[in-house]
Every structure is written in structure tokens, then in C-alpha cells.
Image 1 (cartoon, rainbow, N blue to C red):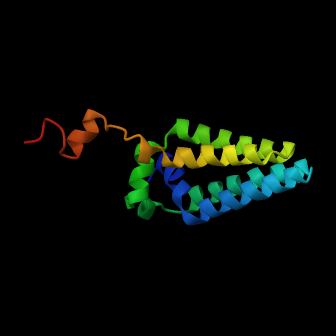
Image 2: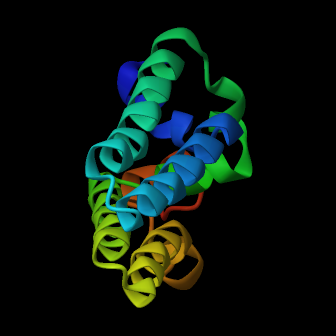
Image 3: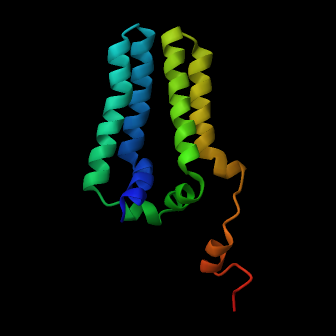
Length: 139
């Protein structure tokens, strides 16, 4: 498995999801408490460190073959990563400015990005359809 695939599939590993969620909410909490350095360090360093070690040391073939793996392959590209990051920044800003609605809005952006494939079905490129035997070229 190449580094691009590992970068994609590590996002759905339960340990990575757990780390991201806990780090985000702890970061928001400490920013709310006006501890900017602690909040930003907690929000960013653990998820980045966990990602680095997971990508370097683990194999994500099980995640790749899962239904969720197929989902992220289809719906979670660079734009989704950017949108999720912006959602986190909105949450952190909400913590700093002490606006619960801003924290909720950022969280909803993140959830919306993860769920976008459930709402907006993306058509596969023709080459992918042919590979799966669903295109016009099937014999």
C-alpha cells in the first residue's frame, strides 16, 4: 500500500477517529479557558503525531477493503480534507470567542463532510465503471 492510500485509509481507523475527536474538543475547551498555547497544542499535535506513526508503521488493508474504506475512496478527497480542517478551525474559533453556536457550526461542517456521500451520490468515472463491470463496454 502506498503512502497516498495509507494517508486516506488511516482516517477511518478507530484510534485515529478517537484521537481527532478528543483532541478537537479538548482544544476547544482550553481555548474557551483562554489557554491558547495549550489549546492549540492539544488540538493539533496529537492528531498529527498519531497520523505520522500510523501511516509509517501500520497497514490499512483491512480498512481499505471495508465498506467505509470504499466510501472514503469515493467521497473523501483533498476538498473533503480541506473542509474538515476548516470545520476544526471554526470550532476552535468558537472556543476562543466563547460562542457555542460557532463550535456547533464547525462540528456540523465536519459531520457534513463525512456524510456528503450519503446525500450526494457521486457517479464513478467511466474507467471505474468499466473496471467494475458496470459500463457500456461490458461483454
